[in-house]
Image 1: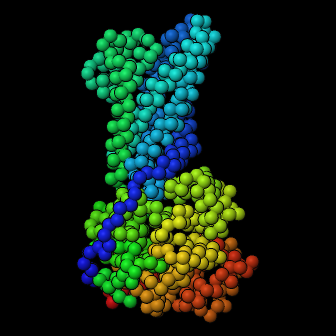
Image 2 (image 1 turned 120 degrees about the horizontal axis):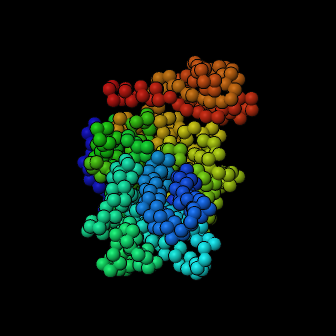
Amino acid sequence: MSPAAPEATTAPRAISNRPPLGAIATVVGITVARQLRGKRIWLFVAMFALPLAIALLMHRYAEPYEPEDAAIGLLLVLIPQAVVPLTALLFASSLVQDDVEEQTLTYFLIRPIPRWAIYVAKALGAALVTSALAALFITATLATIWWGVDGRGAGDLAYEAAALTTASALAMLAYIGIFGLLSLLTKRVLVVGVGYVILFEGIVSNIPFLVRYATVLFHARVLELRWLDLDGKPWAIDPATAPAASTSLAFLAGASAMFLGLGAWLFAAREFRLKTPEGG
Amino acid sequence: MSTSDADAKPPDDGPVIEFLAASKWYGQVIGLNNLTLRVGRGVTGLLGPNGAGKSTLLQLATGQLRPSQGEVRVLGVRPWNNAGLNRRVGLCPEQDAMFEWMTGRKFLRACGELAGLGRRGARAAADRVLEQVKMTAAADRPVRGYSKGMRQRTKLAQALIHDPEVLFLDEPLTGTDPVARHELMELVAGLARAGRTILVSSHVLYEVQALTSQIVLMNRGRLVAFGDVRQIRDLIDAHPHRIVLKGPDRRALAAKLVRWDDVEGIELPRDGRTIVVETREPERFYQRLPKLAREADAPIEEIESDDDSLEAVFKYLVNP
């Protein structure tokens, strides 16, 4: 068998690669629908229901009941330090993997949507679901803690809920960027991700040293501290020397953009083998 | 028929799909081996046993994979990372996967929106392709409840949703009943008559033969032959052809089949639903099957063809 000389018979033609916005919105919609239907959503609910259940128990049985302590322990420690990063890991780890395993990624890849846009749209879909549900549970936990306590008006609670859910949504987006990138780099994303959450976000962010400035949790806490005018002593954050809210906001937005960008670049460069050797 | 890559002649009006010394490796495994092939307008059958490299070829042509060596062009441009080309190309994938929570209509609308048709355009396109594949009546049922034949029709419909110029169909007839098979073949033939370029893969020669006389024969990632189907068929007819039928009442089916003079042997495997028929006249056998299926006392749910006889021909062509 002698192959013919490899010579193209027609000159390459330019075809528009402009991403259709409606198509990208559909990727977001399909991602949201998939996330809401999977088993993962029940794990998410269980993890966020834990602080809510603790709040209910404390409110009912703690003697004397100290709502300030409950708010710090649940809303400012348990949720941002463990629940938010772990739920983000749960959803980000399956961003692409679900479509590879279920062999539905083809339906995105054969459409006129640039690969980078498919990845970003899927990440935004996951961020949308996790942030909206987190906002729901954070607000419910806050309301449970302060329900029936004198001196807290509905306006104060609404403001606190808005501040906490915004900080958690920004942290969630950054974590989805980080863990989405990790899921493209390693098949053991859950192990690596949990290690990252414990070591980096759990330990490093609490040590008053320069490296903590590179953690998502530190900047999410600074935002809560600034917006809610809190004392930073429990986390060894001195409000006098801590970054301004705008700096932490810029850090979280920048980190999200950087990790989403890196993930999108890797997704665009990688092959996903669905019906070929090494495929799902 | 030729058995040389060099003889893969382009049709008169120029190639639509080109593989230029293209190879694809998966680590140590070779998916496509130095393939040079030029495919023109009309229907071309891509034939080969499982693992021949058909899916690799189609995934390279639709930009899902990047060639390890050589070049691939569709409509004159490289498909890898070229999203714009997907406006003009459609793929019916082999894998039996869809967004299972959707109804058929919603799935097709979503595919239309993904194809950039917009919400209104996708709605109209979904209705059009549902009619084309005769799935309108079942369109509002969830796809997870569809039979294999209905899923194949729906997958074909999503490939047609944006009215592409070039269609890649990966084993579109696998697992379909005789009636669905006939209707899908009619549809593909109609699309070809309307000027589409269609590359349809199968491991069953007689499916492809009903659609086109232009065949690309592949084995182990290499082009074995490219040319007219009749000469390939003559080789295959020299070997007994094994056809697997599935139906609820296989004994009644076997009782009818045993009277056919073109049936040389019948096996009844232990699974209780399958019949393996051996024939040296598969074309005649396939032609008579739809009539048999319509007879209410012996329905046929699925037809499959064993690779064995095709494999024998490949061995013959590779090592004559």
